[in-house]
Length: 498
Image 1 (cartoon, one colour):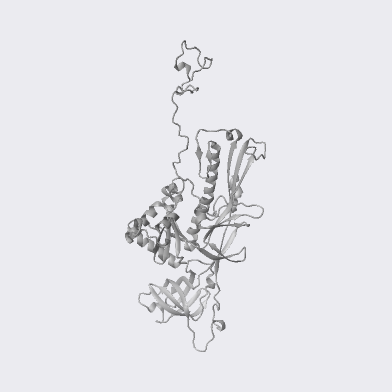
Image 2 (cartoon, rainbow, N blue to C red):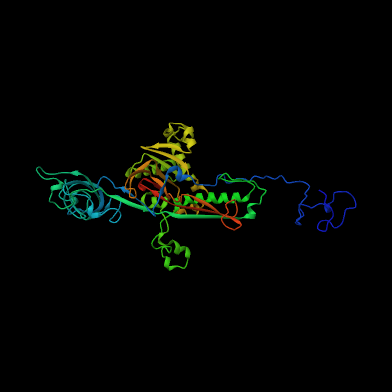
């Protein structure tokens, strides 16, 4: 377009009507007045989505449940084992078994009191010592010391390959034997317990408060950009603040899930606990009430750990997977389990299955989905059965994405998480707050809420922009808040692959 002479454009008029550089603002001149380029660029307005769906939230909502709470902590109890089995030492010369822990390794103070072990006089037991399973009869109980006399010999050291010393041993009660005309356990004058009392373990967790914030000035809200944006939450248009606010919201939603996976309780030695020993206000504000137990920490402390299926070769991977099944047999033996694994573990398992089963794509069997391949793929899982267990395998984006756990796994190889196995279904637990037994998913989120305030996911806007005028600040301030914790019930049925 032609432009008339002016002091800021062209100081000398062209003598003839002609297209000259001096009569136009050159877009490529770099002089700051770059308009009027002869050829317009081919402008691609839409923002390219080069990372696909960037959010990782949704895992907990798919495998667990969410429930409101009104307290500062949640306490639940889990039943103990039905049968009596203990670890300890066996003096093979005098046939005395000293209880050290229960079969799960719990000692006094961990929900198990050694002196209340439950083994009684006249019980029939098996003592596993030095590779032998010796059948014994209990003749005396003195607190944690149990006299278990072998049926097949005078003393345990009379058996082949059993040394005359204190040896590590395991004791299992299999029944009892009484003489004719004698009273039962209730009327016996012998020392030791008369009634086996059920035991349970109590656990607790506390919610933490999470916050985020986004602010934009009133002028920037009214400014239109030339790039058309779109986001995971459905925001679109040419207003860039929609993109920024939507990304902040999506990021906070991911934080809600990532925290429930990764968080851990604060150790007593942490400087965060020593609020009076630091000048940092952030430490002082948290103090001893900081931290909460996330999924990975709960499985590490109360569940099972394995290197998983390492991808060495199909035969080795199958043996490693069978070792996982053996661990589940020792626990609740939940029939249906969900596996969330990273890409390397997923491919290793596909190769393992392909070597054993030629049916289906990649050797994957869809039997647990009524043998329907479409049903399995629509759910995003590959299903297969091994032994008496059904497994539903799915890739876990959080473990693969470079912007999340993927990069951490590459840098911290000794603490890398390759996947986890989570039981499906529900468990029965005693809720001490409600005072009754409840059926709940093994995994669920508790968030603070009451009739006055719901803190599951709060969002509010302050300022003078957006129609919600709350102050004279010429800006829009968006606040996000949530208060929640994760409850992992029956962690002994979970397995973490590291």
